[in-house]
Length: 313
Image (cartoon, rainbow, N blue to C red; front, side):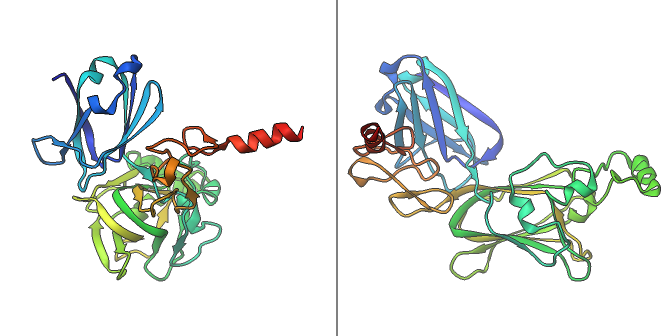
């Protein structure tokens, strides 16, 4: 059987993939076998309970949720010979614009700045006030994001103060003595942080991680050994000997657990699927097609609305 294997540079959660083919006749999910290789193993396991949604005559989305991160996937079947491209999603940033708080306020460095989705953090320290979080002196600093619903978490990305340049110590010292506004500052405040994930039911820790690095990093990547389920809160604390904590962006990749018939980061959107079947929680795309009166990839466009608009004119 014809097959194609993809080896990933970094283990990721396998949430969904998109296939684009050149021959519409081959875009049949009965002709496709999707398997994955869990991190640390040598074998490929076929996806169970796979969900499929046809986006167009040449595009197919497939959802395959795994308990652990994967380091490779394999496609088998006639579709491989007509494959134009393959997109593999590692999930989405479920922390984006979610409620965030911090231990103390150092205005105007608000906690919400760390989940605003901006990665274009300026080097100018004054400008960073609008894009980074920052705690005040005194108590041990902490920052946390709370999810409106239980979530699954697969990996974390923590973005440090970009003005910090640990490879140019001499320049750092010169800027500091000259009191230049663009002075290199503060990257060490994130070193040796502690990251904790609290559960949905008991709010007890279900995952803990302490940064072992001896120098500051621009970006910290944390990948748990298994996907964390039913998480409700992520808390980041400064090292035990520090009171100030700064974060310019926190990305939490995973997925939300929505009731059947709903989708979105907060499960705030209703699926518009035929026979009221479920849809993909990340996009609202229906596995069985759109309900009567709705069109589009996410079945949001209302044919009824268009008809009424034309009639009123």
